Amino acid sequence: MKKFNIRVAQEKDIPAMLEIETSHKMTPHWNREQFVKEFHLSCSRLYVAESEGKVGGYLGLWLVPPETQITTVAVHPHYLREGLGTRLLESGILQARQMGFSVVTLEVNSQNESALRLYKKLGFKIVGSRSNFYNDGEDAILMELQL
Ligand SMILES: CC(C)(COP(=O)(O)OP(=O)(O)OC[C@H]1O[C@@H](n2cnc3c(N)ncnc32)[C@H](O)[C@@H]1OP(=O)(O)O)[C@@H](O)C(=O)NCCC(=O)NCCS
Image 1 (spheres, rainbow, N blue to C red):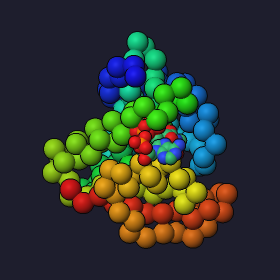
Image 2 (cartoon, rainbow, N blue to C red; image 1 turned 90 degrees about the vertical axis):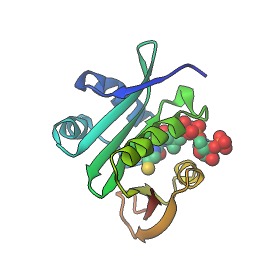
Image 3 (cartoon, rainbow, N blue to C red; image 1 turned 135 degrees about the vertical axis):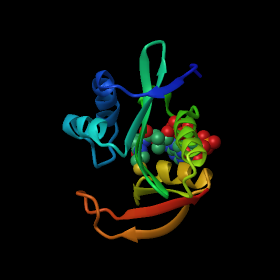
Image 4 (tube, rainbow, N blue to C red; image 1 turned 90 degrees about the horizontal axis):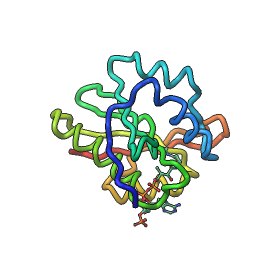
């Protein structure tokens, strides 16, 4: 596996993040405006995993005490199943812990088997669901990790 460095994202990373976002079938997709908006929201943090100038994945958080919400996470198709999604999420969880947050939450499409497995592996528990939540008519599964 390439050696990825996780750093704070910059607006210049948006094209690389968009490329990753649109390379996956899962919905909903964020568009350019949504990424830009995240850079200007005071509660929002975006991180990228970079290796030799290439972005391999990204993570978005909302820091709203006492809760850290995972707003997005995705890995480039070239680097799937190499532990990068785990590393990105673990770095977000570590940050939440270090900042004294008590819980990490997220929403995931009920059909997104790989993400559901990843979150369960990291200790997230299902705490609820929202029917017909996504544009494709699928339910959202609500998960949380108590810190
Ligand atoms: C979900 C996602 C971020 C996982 O990234 P990744 O770097 O491939 O994940 P990891 O290599 O860290 O995998 C960790 C665990 O997740 C689970 N997992 C990941 N991909 C999987 C797949 N295709 N099928 C089944 N389980 C999978 C496995 O339990 C895996 O552990 P293992 O490899 O030891 O079996 C990636 O598939 C992705 O970018 N998906 C599209 C965007 C998305 O759906 N994001 C989540 C929105 S809520």
